[in-house]
Length: 246
Image 1 (cartoon, rainbow, N blue to C red):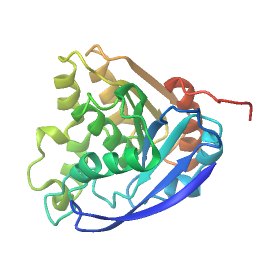
Image 2: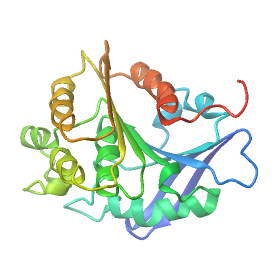
Image 3: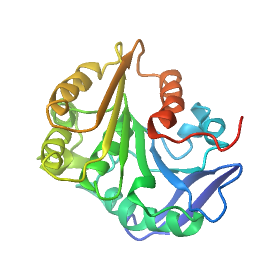
């Protein structure tokens, strides 16, 4: 297994930025790797998942690469103020760079995205905005009702004074539900999490829309030990299994 820290200059972000990359112990011969883009939460960075969970051990013998970008506190959007166009950077720079640099599959069926809290929101948003690129997305304790959060906190630097439809998961889910290509969705939240009610609200909304959708909840709060458990279980849901015994 290889764990890499990669830095490069982003034109979209107009700055140096970094990604953390996990590559498996042994990859299948002559076959590009599947890829999971794993997104951090608010105040996190590209190191968060490796520092706080056992993600390296979970993917050691799986034929998948894990790409973890630094998204600052951007909510995975093109920010209204400043120059941090993170969504454009992610789609137009990071994904092509990662695919070419690490021989990743460019197939939709081999491309997944997941995240926690702010990253859970980002994973669902990106997958719903680009359903032709991702076959599955997962959210752990996600910020599902972004309109409520924007009303209760000052995120004007990110979203401006008016929340656009493309930033609203409820709007995106309803829109994408009408198209033939839809990502599978996995959602988990702890029953003691301060975002639990927002997650239930989104669950009730998306269950009516015809997605291949899995919702799970268990006892838990907004803490890393629960996200560690859920990311370990995620690979079975994705259908990614060990290529040898651990």
